[in-house]
Length: 375
Image: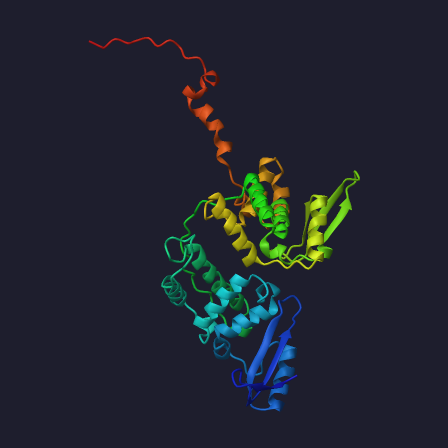
């Protein structure tokens, strides 16, 4: 049904009429049909009828499709896919909002590599205030996060030529990523963290640490927990086991995470008593403990997720099971969460350094016969 168009800033009627609906074609992805420029209601209604039957506007041509802006394409993408809505991945959505602010009025079909490079040049000028970033500049990984948002809109639009015109997405100027040491939180460190929280009377944080350490959950998954998602069942051997039932995850794949039964009871009790997760609160409390124990500034609460993948692997859990437990789409991602401790490398000393006890592992040496100098 057509509607009168209002100015988004003043909310006053513009005198134009608009049509906005999703066209559903068999075997094709749904696409949004939206125009806000019809001169009368009758013209808008006629165009809507035509578009609902054909998937095209009566007067559409490549020039009009080419005029769809980057901002409108991004809005269409967000509206159609739940993973791009503002409630998901807040930091990613903030980056997308920033990219839109820079490319807002530019036709999505006309965005070039130079435009994307200009975004990067602008970002590089922004100072970064972080104790963990001594350079004061955005890292390549962060810059690529912005490029990922821009690339997603461009790729999505290029796959829908009837709406956005026929074009090939530009080459993305991906930035080099300097690999840094990733720190995972050992069981000993988790124990010290719990001890510190107990001394402060922060018993809710004690449960948070125990749950994150035992489940390897992402914080975004943890803060979305509700009491009904924590359950207790029995195995075929009548062993009681707790479960965290996740329906909404980063990869849009539901998964069940087993945890100790008593921990499940503690977690459910915490949630039933009105506990509301706050990353900012938990991070500030964690930072107090980190400074007290003198831990590396790069060791964050996320280190408990890395620890889960590491300890499962060290205890010989099969790779596919670790992948499923962590909720990764591919095992290559899981491998990034598996870290060796220095203790795991100690055996190398015996194998590679004979003077350190490795002599008995080596073959007995034969007698060396001195060879005289040739005359």
